Amino acid sequence: MKVTVDSDRCRGHGICLTLCSEVFALTDDGYAEVQVPEVLAEFEAPVRDAAAACPERAIEVTG
Ligand code: SF4
Image (cartoon, rainbow, N blue to C red; front, side, top):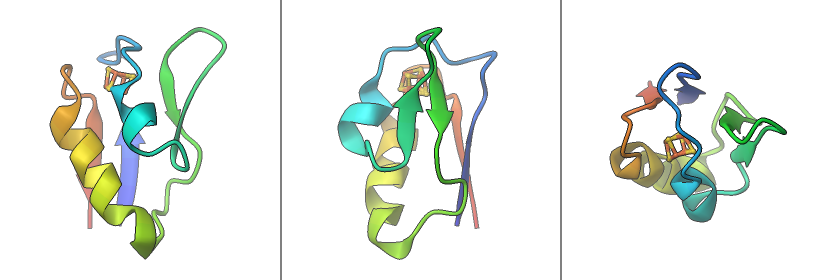
């Protein structure tokens, strides 16, 4: 499974970090970035939760 954050949509709410800080981080500019594009199995559920919870629909999960 892969995950990306659309930087044009992200507004830096940080919900994704709250749900999975192992995969998401905030840049110095205050927007989310993906630290590990290829998601380990143990983090798939929280990453899907983050994608569903993102108010901007900025997180895309594939695979
Ligand atoms: S929850 Fe969505 S909008 Fe908020 S920081 Fe994460 S990717 Fe960006």
